[in-house]
Amino acid sequence: MSIERVIVFIIDGMHWQAPAKLDMVHYKALAAAGTSIGQSCLIIPHHPTVGEYGQLHSTSFPNPVLQEGTIFVQKGNRMLQDLFGAGEPTAFMVNSKAYETVTRGFDICLQHPGYTDEALVTHSLEMLDRLPIRYLRIHLQTPGNEGRFLTTTAPDKPYYRNIWGEGSPYAAALKEADRQLGRLVSFLEKKRWLENTLLIVTGDHGQSIKGWHPVIDPDSSLTPLLFHGPGIARGRQLTYFEHTDISPTIAALLQKQPPNTDGGAGRFVDAVLETTALPAAAHPRYIETINRQLNEYNALRARILIQAETDSYYSSLLTYLENELLTPEPFYHQDRFLEWYRAGSVQHLVETNNGILEKMRAEITIPPSPSRST
Image (tube, rainbow, N blue to C red; front, top):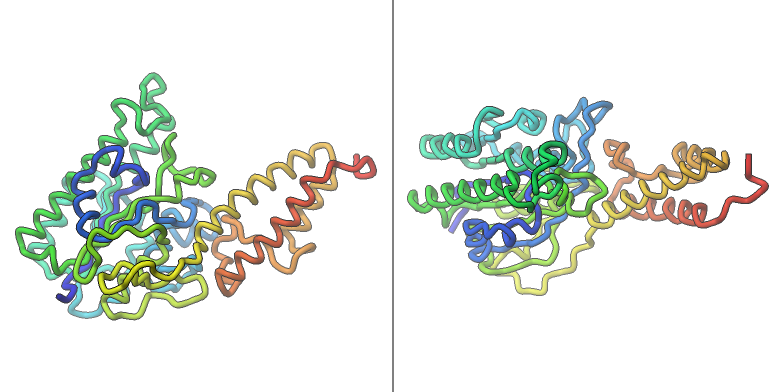
C-alpha cells in the first residue's frame, strides 16, 4: 500500500519516560503496531535568541535540524516541506509563534498561541477533512510550556522543579496530548486513512526532570519516537535513532531525495521497514557523541576559568584554544553552531573536538606550577 499522506505529530518537550510513567495509551498502542524508539537522540536544545543564530531561527536547534535533516544548519538549506511540489499541499499547525522560521515553504500555516492543544487538533482535523494534505506537522506546545513554567513558579507545590510531582501540570498536559493523538487516530480510522498514512510521533526535544531543556541534562536530548504506516515493521523496537534521520527516512519512504545531503545529514534508517531483517547495521551515534563532547567542553572550560582566577596562564590557554592558536580548527561548540558545516563531515567534527578535549583534559589535570603563579 502506498503512502497517501505524512503526518508528524510533535508533543513539545516529551520526556523519554513519559509513555510508560503516564500510561499514554494511544501512544503505546501506536508504538505496539509500528516501530518505536524509546530514546531517540537529538542535538542539544540550545536556544539562543541573539547573534547570528537568533537572526536565522526563532526556535531551538532540534527544530531546524529535524526539518532540514542535518546538523549543518545554514541559510538556504532545504526543509522537509520543500520535497512536496504542486498538487501536494503541506501544512504546519502549532499553538505558538516560536516556529516561524521553520514554517517557510508550507502552503498552509497556523500559528496561534491562544489555542489549546484540543483546539489546534480540532482545526487540523477539519483541514484534513476538507483538503488533500500531503504533509502535515501538528505541534502541541502546551507540554513544553508547562515544563518550563514549573521551574520558576509555584515553589509551594509538589511539582515545583519536579515534572512527575503530584498534580504536575506538565504531566497533565502530556496526558492531554495523548488524548489528542487518540482523536487524530480515530479520525484517520473513521476515514479509513490510517493504513495509508505515515504517522510519526515524537517530541521536538526532551525534558529535564526539573523542567524545560537545560543543555547539560542528558534527558533534554532524548525523546520517544514512533513510526506507523505502510511498510513499517509492526511491534519492532530499535535501540538507537537520531532526529537527523527523520527527514531522510521520510524522504526515502516517499521515494524522494532528502532535503540535504551534506556531511552533517542524517540517513535513511531502513530498520523501520518490515522487509528489513534485524539486527540492522550499527548506527555511528554521532549526535550522542557530539552532545557528550559539548557537555564535557563546557565543564572543562568552566574549570579552566576558575583556575584562571589564581593563575593567568589559564586565561591565556582559553584564548589560545578559542582563537585557534593551539589547534588548526576551533572546538565546534554550541555558540558556533552555524559554523559546524566548515568541518565538512560529522566524523571530522567529532575528531576535531576530541583532539581539543584531550588538550583541555591534560591541562586541567596538571596542578598549577609555581612558575605560572601571578
